[in-house]
Image 1 (cartoon, rainbow, N blue to C red):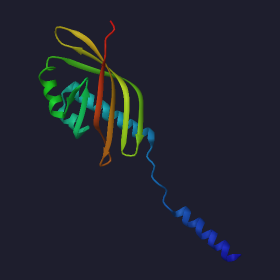
Image 2 (image 1 turned 60 degrees about the vertical axis):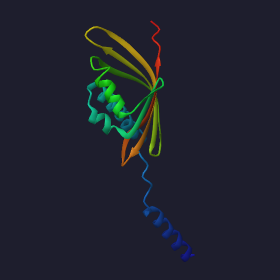
Image 3 (image 1 turned 90 degrees about the horizontal axis):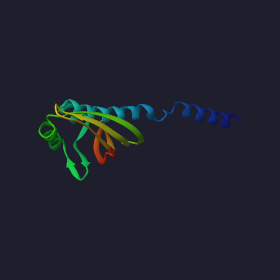
Length: 151
């Protein structure tokens, strides 16, 4: 009986001393993913190309209405075609999911675009995929579809 009790006590002590698996705080992880998304769009608004690159993987791709954007092509378009426009984004987050080192989200993106001559809205429904690289979330892929203006 003493041997059985001693074995049970040792087993209990071993279980108590075994480190528990570090589970990420889902709320904090989702907040980190949301921050990366906001950083990416802040980079577009402010033409901060270092922030754009640091918030996404080196090979990030955005597919928008059939167009294929890389860092270089997106920067070129913003600095040339969109150079005279001020674009401000706002978001209606719909859902964010996490699974290990991958995260994905979908949302509505509502932009107000202005120039000295005009102001107009653009609305998109978008999804983004993120990958955790060296402990940091990075945007890896995005898909965007323009929602037609009904006005």
